[in-house]
Image (cartoon, rainbow, N blue to C red):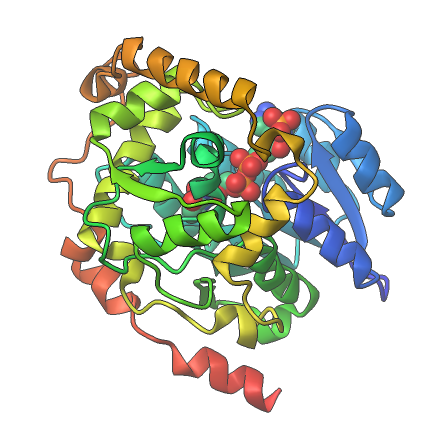
Length: 368
Ligand SMILES: NC(=O)c1ccc[n+]([C@@H]2O[C@H](COP(=O)([O-])OP(=O)(O)OC[C@H]3O[C@@H](n4cnc5c(N)ncnc54)[C@H](OP(=O)(O)O)[C@@H]3O)[C@@H](O)[C@H]2O)c1
């Protein structure tokens, strides 16, 4: 192997793939960025020094081509159906290419019998990745991203409402990480496999926040008062159907509803916040309000005006008029494999056992 390892980043134009690529390049790494189209994000990666590979990352032939000459890789299944297919194809191509190290983006909730198909697929993918004798693996398992709250930034900016089905407003149930902080943990592991092989990391933001805290931070960043409204799951599916975020399929919406249930159960608060961003990523985790300020900065669409307020009200009427998604129907229409006895993460003995603070990993880094 040359002295400079080559690193493949999949989902390189995505929420975590983009900062993973940029941070690796910033640290002088040699990076191939896998994107599905040559657009302005691909050009940005190219300008920053990445070799851009355009292809379909669900396609084994493309993955095999992308892995040629690579030594390490960031494995990131898109938030979309067929995650297990992507991960299986990735694992085959990585084993054939005899990659020395993989950093895989998993999930905080990852467990074998989870009600969410996407989560069960992540669990299986994680086990699969570890079967290859030539490759070491680091798992980065974040919880509910800070980015998720920003799906409703328009409503907050123009109607003063933060609407999500997160349960009581005063219960502190998530320490949301920024995409960049999640990326920093993956980057550390990609650059130093020896220190991070076999580790599982759970990057979080610095502080557990309640929905009221989230609303207040969004309000501070927007310069207006914002109140939390605990909406029903049905209303959430109506909103996501009326105004789908980019790339969000009905299948993804159905999984988000299950993650909201986990949120209300407090699963993202179990042993959170962690110190992984600080100890592994080497940076101070970004406060939620600062994350929102970054998103809002220089975006005229969040500035208040009568026309934008009227547009937001029209958007709200559209939500009310949109039929809710029949979550059970989505799963049966797609022939989802169902576990015999679905169990939320905290009801699973393995999950509870492995979601404890991991002083071992931190100690090893301290002495490194
Ligand atoms: N959001 C959360 O709260 C959360 C929490 C825990 C774990 N996760 C995990 O995060 C992962 C997603 O990571 P992310 O948010 O960084 O990814 P992401 O933003 O969903 O990015 C996926 C990228 O993959 C690209 N892509 C989609 N289909 C492709 C194809 N066929 N070929 C090539 N590229 C394709 C997309 O391209 P375009 O942009 O061009 O469409 C997009 O840039 C999921 O596996 C999920 O389990 C998410």
